Length: 478
Image 1: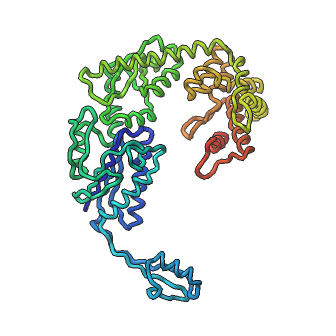
Image 2 (image 1 turned 90 degrees about the vertical axis):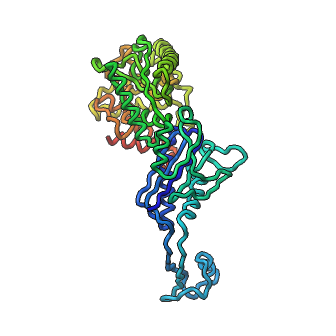
Image 3 (image 1 turned 180 degrees about the vertical axis):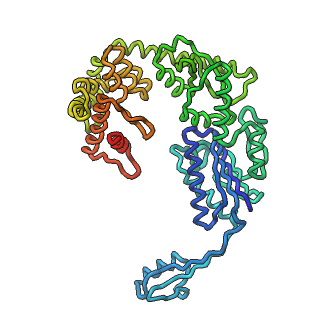
């Protein structure tokens, strides 16, 4: 059966958009094919740093003839209603058939070549593709995530004539920006397309890129008696940054290991896209990192590792500065700053929110068997770390850093743990707190979120929940 191959080749697509783009490409083409009565035996899409690819197997050469009996207005209906029905069917009045007092239209549509239909579908898909952000370039009007350069469009072994905004379809693509030959090459079907890309240092399938990263990373770690710290989210991202991913193990200054491990990992992950590695004997972080390059360097990656190590050191020096400076001011002293931070225009400041949390935590504590004074103190200090330099630099560490700073101040470990964990659970896979004081503060935090935003009519809708109220409600239930 005929095969359809489409590649949309552009400048670099942001990694965070690639997975959803592949899903949207699949959905949009599949829905439009179904609407035309064209059902492929198999359809799959691939995403990468510079291309979206679709392969469909088993499409017919041409669409079959279609017959439809469409029900219209009742006999004797106003002329305007009948004329509107005729326009929608493309028939004249003498072609209508009366049945049980109702007009029916028998519509016959001759089938068209599949290539012609798919060309129309591709035009619709490109013009309406739901990129979160898109751009125009040159003098054209077409919007795409980045400038669109080439379109491979082959059906049944032949190029399908197609043009959009001056970009013509063809059977030519190109490989890796640096390691490839630098010359475009022709393809004739999916097998030759995939194999020639691989020969030009491009791995098409993101799952294969992930496997290559993990296999190479674990091999490097094993050789140094280290263990890779798994991070599925980071793996997804770096697989979208490199067409020919090459893991490289680098070294960091061991003096930085006295920082909280979450700070080190966040510095690596957020800013540099590095994986952390640990010592399997102690389970603690090791003074190394793993980065993923997009080339195979002649020196085995030594210079890349050295350069990345210098950048990481600079990041960790900043983190050390925040860590040292933040500990000079107590959490209690930071509460005053919350008076100048707006929680929401209709809900007052963070300081006012903290007052509500104290009252709620104190009321909830006896219901969950918690010490009231400790629950109130934890609620009072729960948002203080929002005024720290570390959380200002790494917002994802809020709560966690409050717990660390509380322990540095010799505050009760029970209170410190409640400050650390009061946002939990933050998702379906996150564990819910199970200690009484933490439970009291976590429930208070979520109930305040729910009641406050419902009070100002900021309710979730079918498609929007900007304040994560559903997640708050589910957290309370858990």
